Amino acid sequence: MEILLPDKEPLLSFLQDIIRIPSPSTKERGVVERVAEEMKRVGFAEVFIDEMGNVVGRIGSGGGKRLLYDAHTDTVGIGDPSAWSRDPYGAEIEEGVLYGRGAADNKGALAAMIYGAKSLIDAGLALIGDLYVVGTVQEEDCEGYAVGLLCRKVKPKAVVLGEPTNLQIARGQRGRVMLVVTVYGRSCHASTPELGLNAIYEMNKVVAGVKALNSKLAQHPLLGPGSIAVTRMESSSASLVAIPDRCQAHLDRRLTWGEDEELALAQVREIIQEKGVEAQVETMVYEARSHTGYPCRQRKYFPAWLLEEEHPLVQMGARAVKKALGYEPQIIGWRFSTDGVATKGELGIPTIGFGPGEEAHCHTTEDQARVEDLVKAARVYAQFALDFLGR
Ligand SMILES: [Zn+2]
Image 1 (tube, rainbow, N blue to C red):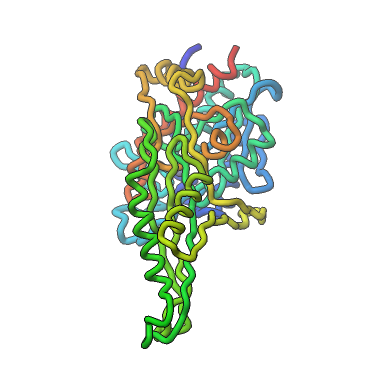
Image 2 (image 1 turned 60 degrees about the vertical axis):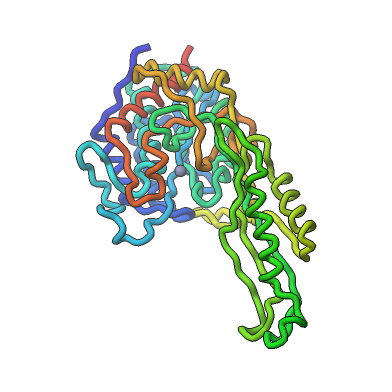
């Protein structure tokens, strides 16, 4: 099948539009509505916003196999605006590069997916099955939650994530679990500290054990090692002249292949026991209301996921890149976490990643995507859908 060329100018001006609408997690309404409008304009067969507020567009025959393309509509904030050399919401194009919050993560891919689908619509190619293009919400705060909810309904056979791969194919990532350790002490007047039990000193023992745990964690050749870090600590005491009776530490635990929540909790419990500290560890809980008011709640556990390099979906992705762009893509693992934690990690749906932009630019003041790469990504999204849903 012949390569399809997406329209560059409308793709770019649409992307500029959605970068100019700020969309922090749970406040994506403006972008979601703009995306829905664009999907309708370019001729998607069905466009809707689901109960959580994801924007969903479908093209295809309305029956048979389902393929789902996922890019998220929310972005992280911009931090100190003066740290940016350009307007973070300006979406300026300079020497073939489009700059702005979300250009790499993840609005560039969303625009490319929609224009990839448009080139299929314009060519009038009949698909056997359906392509769903989805702009999910709240990925930055709780990856997987929104797409997981949708996938339970749509039941796709495969998922392609648009997170930045610099036009290579990703086949997995480490998972993560967010833990909170609470240590209990015994308060007394700070003038006689020997009469109490200082919860901060007790926590120090746990922290030392946590730091040492890093060298004992599992390794994986593609995904890298498991890791653990203390990311926040707070104590409470009756006053600044009282010994603290409670101290809490937050732990960011990255899980490599073969590690899970249960193991992570058991390892920290072992440290607590070894150090003889009175403490407990548990998984944090995500709670939020989406922009439609949908109540979200789940443990902050995001499983690692991986497809074999030989998996048909990975190979199909590599072939689509070769056909559309003429080179053999590298097969990579992501360092960060994505919606794949739900699609593959939780639901077992074969998932790969392919997107414009570079991982190194995500969440930075240099958020950007090369214009040519946006067009190239759209070609690959069109080609892959055609290969997956063609005859
Ligand atoms: Zn992202």
